Length: 222
Image 1 (spheres, rainbow, N blue to C red):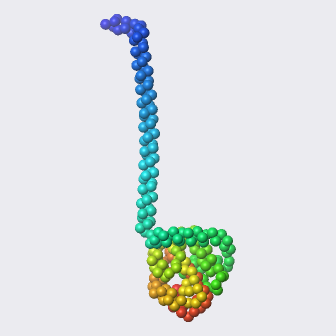
Image 2 (image 1 turned 90 degrees about the vertical axis):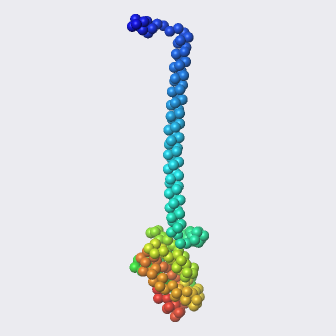
């Protein structure tokens, strides 16, 4: 039997058999190449799937954070957009701002007080200084909220949230407006609460003639 096996090993294969064997080898190599390409494509597809999954997860997290922020937001979206555009305008104009002793004094006052009232005649830059100061606070994390009506400060105040309220020409442009004074007077308890909140600042600008009006004395916080 061993002798027969040795003979088979040493036996020269005929041409047809060689062709069959070569075809089998080529077919095997072809299948190996195809399998290799298939594995390569699968690896690539897997990487893409993992990458897309990470993107979806990140996007979902971003959406969840936005939803949480939206739920925590007390200012309506359209008002926020208006404030955003207003602050952009302030920033453009602030490029021309030149610091003065008055502006430096306002900043220094806010280090120790949460409410500051700027008084001066019309046209001397009270609003400019107030907005400049608010923009400086914004760089440290404060949220700017312009106040047009007393009710705004009640609706938009959030305890322990870094906020700077800007009240321009409080209680009138030329003379003290009795109705506005009454509206602010009704909010005195809330104003005292806000001023006591270490996270909040109130910057008020007021015409000098309005500030000197006896009726304005009804608003001691200012």
